[in-house]
Every structure is written in structure tokens, then in C-alpha cells.
Length: 301
Image: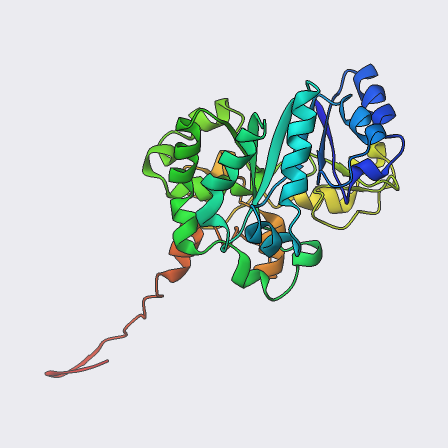
């Protein structure tokens, strides 16, 4: 059981190390994600108390700036080297966008050279500052979505430990080999949205939501959240999928895809509109029914 501290920037909290210690005292494994910027000695000491520290690195140089608005890649790589030298296990969080997708292998190589042992690939989601119209220009193209399984294979064959966030599971359905063996993915713990069930997000003010990319619910404690109406809606949306999800081999592991994307793009309940199978299903034109009336030797349509 894991608690993941994120932000904003978690190292701005003076009690960050104490939170890690408290989690361990409860038998919970603490991990944390940081930008790697401005890591003073007290911050480095606090990070050293976590099981793993993931540093955000969405690209190197201009690629980093395209995602974050500034180039923080030098500081991020320096932070990885410093933490690794202190014996801290380091990973890297990498948000994939249309502009940076082609350079992911180079970014991952730079991270591993700096000491990263694991890469966590993240889907670009329309939340926070990304919930703007330009989201549609920055999300992965259809061609890139279809190329995603091959990217995973390439990174795996390079000997790197690779993880994907739950919202990326629908992208694997385009791969014939993976699509035929969903049970293998499930055994590896590769599952879609678990919001409101195995996953819960708690803000620093104590309010709860099913997913860290959505607004908090009315619940103010974890105990209240189990009966919270909004969290029940998260759970319910995965129980009655429509086509093409209803007959999809991935249904049990994908769980309908990302609700955050669906809410922003489709503005209505239903499957993840960026899933390659859903996109292909939507492209099939509706067959027009022809009513044929026979009248003598002629035919009227």
C-alpha cells in the first residue's frame, strides 16, 4: 500500500520528511515526486526518507520548456545525480505530448545516465493549466497513440523499468498481441482507472477526490469519502460501458479509460474518446437505411 506525495512542489513543506516517517510507521510505503528545483540540504535530507523519489523530466532543453513553460531540465538532471549519490532510489516522471513524443527515448536516456532506475510515463491530461483549448494541439496524435505500444517495447528492451499511469491503458488496446492477452497485463498490475476504489486523492486541506486531476468532493475525511455521492459516480461509470467497450477484450483492465479526458473532450458520459478502438468506432459512418418500395416494375428509394 503506497502513498504518493505530489504537488505543486512537495519540498515546500517543512514537514515533508516527517510525513514520510509517519507513513512508514503505519506500514505505508511513501514515495514523492519533485521538480528537483532548489533542493537545499534540508530538502535533500527530507527526500532521503522516502522509498523512491521521482523527478519530473518531460524533455531536455526546449522539450522541457514546451511542456512546463521554462527549461528546468538541467536542475532536474542535477537533482537525480545528487539524490543517486546519496543512495536514494530515483525514478523519472515523463508527461508525453505531441511535440515531445519523438524525443522520449533521448529523454529517458538522459535520465538513466543521471541515475534514474525507473520511468513513469504519464498521459497529458486536460486538468489544471492544461484544461485549455490548446489541449487538443498538445495531446498525442492518433499516429502517436498507435505507436505507443512499440515505444514501451523499445524502452523495456533497453533494460529500463517502465511504468504507465492508469489513463494510458486504453492505448495498449491497439496492439494485437496485448489485446489478445489482457490477463497477462492484469497479472502485472497494469490496470485502468481505479478512482474511488483502489485509488483516492487527498488534498492538503483534507478534502477527498477519486482522482488527483479532479476537483475535491464534498467529503472532508477519508471515512466520509466511501459514502460520498461523487465518488460513487466514479465507481458507477465503469459498470455499464457502451460500445465499443461493452464487447472489448480490454474491458476488465481498461475500465472505460480516463474519465478526466472524457469529461473535457466529450462533455458527456461514455468511453474514453481518445482510446484507439473508440476513435475507430466513431469513424465508422452510420449506415443509412434505404426503404425500398416496389411499385410495379419501378423501384422507389
